[in-house]
Length: 393
Ligand SMILES: C[S@@+](CC[C@H](N)C(=O)[O-])C[C@H]1O[C@@H](n2cnc3c(N)ncnc32)[C@H](O)[C@@H]1O
Image (cartoon, rainbow, N blue to C red; front, top):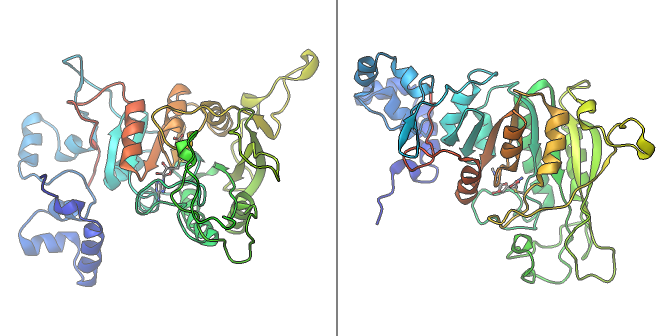
């Protein structure tokens, strides 16, 4: 049986921080009282994934660098490719130190252009400085539709109002981390109240659609009501300060069939374009669409016809890369840093890499993190995915 590390005990770090602050100690003071290094306290508080090591200063000195340089990634570790060590290029972010602070949440993958943080977006975002990202492209879990099977997940709230409040709070943090001319591209789908069924029938065609329960019909709604989640969320975000700039209908020509006979089959979801300020970066030229009759390409319209294309490893809805591509091209420039706080299998990261953008992805579920790392990894460090290379004190 593997021994559980104390730092893996749920809530340990947060309890320690709260109790230390209540007792009036800084990390340094508490460390001094115990006769240990401050890094030791930081480690127990979950601020760094590096176990404290007393040989670190001597190690760094022998190698001719400072301890911070050794930890922060200015001199990254060699990558092993086919048994040969190949020095990796230094990690360079146009936005400076944010990557270092992201790493302190629990960075599990670090490449020159992509960083993946495993954890709850609510906590991970709080570690990221203001004005970091050019845009955020994301698809939160839909309400009451899928069970991602992990504590802290968004979407399994019994009440859609609570779900919306949770998302508004997360996107408030996202707004803080966006540059002043930044945008949010938010994909969100709708769902129905449960009617008189408490359990969903298993969905044999699409395991990702199955949820082990149906939440109760929310107050104020009737059985079989379409809830209107996308617009409830969009209006709540608008009330919270976002500029609601466009609703884009993502039409899915190859949508899943539904066994309904009293309404049309749903074939669309929404992508809301929101901005932090009244004027913002939007490259309309980059996503022009073809005109009829061989005329000049025209400004992109608000209905996007894009097939869903499942990713075989995933049991949930993955973004079609084409949808992400349009958001990336219009919402950023090469070299920009893009955020996805619900990273899933990492489609946003892959598209960013293809178009020379940088990306920070946050994902709660370790299984999906592994999936994303696998999709992202061309190289593997010593047979493991790269643990955080960057964690400044
Ligand atoms: C719709 S999926 C995203 C799929 C992704 N766009 C892709 O292409 O693979 C939503 C993701 O949000 C994750 N999630 C749910 N609650 C979260 C939270 N509190 N913090 C971070 N991620 C969360 C789920 O585990 C799931 O992977």
